[in-house]
Each structure stands twice: as structure tokens, then as C-alpha cells.
Amino acid sequence: MNNFNIINETNEEIKELTDVKKLLVFALKKLNIENALFNIIIVSEEKIRELNREYRAKDSVTDVISFALEDDNTFVKTDIRVLGDIYICLNRAKSQSIEYGHSFLREISFLSIHGLLHLLGYDHMNKEDEKKMFSLQELILNEYGIKR
Image (cartoon, helix red, strand yellow):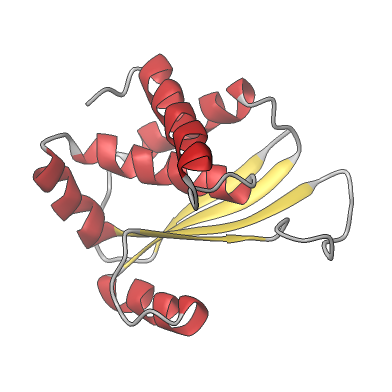
């Protein structure tokens, strides 16, 4: 059984998180992921900028940062996969939903799936990997019913 938490560290109520939880259950089932443990943490611009600066040496606000614990072979192998943490910037998600002309639910869902795929080892550092990851993101979102 998978176990994940969505933690809202902002002062704002985010009603869409109930739908994001359902999407994540769907995505994990579709990806045949079992016994995974991870967190999604919704944070302020200040917090995500601090994380971006400290861990990526980029002094700027970003939309999502994933900290994967299975990135190398130093993790302890157990029956439970401890995947890591996904940080999503609430204000960036809001502004990007307006910029891209879709709902806030679509944007926060996209960022959640994007972060989850990073935790699972997907990346977009080259065109081939980007195509694979972005196609999978869209497939999951579309099959669940969250369209642009």
C-alpha cells in the first residue's frame, strides 16, 4: 500500500488538494508503484527560493522541486520505497495557471505528477528523456480527466 501526505505549509486553504490526492492514487496505480512513501509540501515563494538556493545554487523562485531519495545506490532497500519529498510553490502554481490559461487544479495536478515522476527517476535533461517524461505526465492527467 502506498502512503503519501500532502502538507500545506501556507496560510491559504487549498480545496483542490482533495482532487490531487485522488489523482496521485490513480497515477501510482497506473505506474504499478506499490509500497511507496513520499510527501508533497505546499510552500511559499520565500521557502521554495531558500530551497532552490541551498540545494540547487539558484537564487530564484521556482514552481516545483523534488528531492528523490532513490537517486543513487546509497538508499537502504526495504519493502517500502521511501521516494522523497516534492515542494510546490503555491503562488507560482496560481500564477502559472493564469499564464497558461487553465485551472489551478490542472496546474497543481501537473506539478504534483511532474514531481512524482522525478522521484521515480524520470528526468528531462535531454530531448529523449523530456519527451518520455512529458508524454507520461500528459497521459496520466488526460486519463484521469484533467485536461488543459
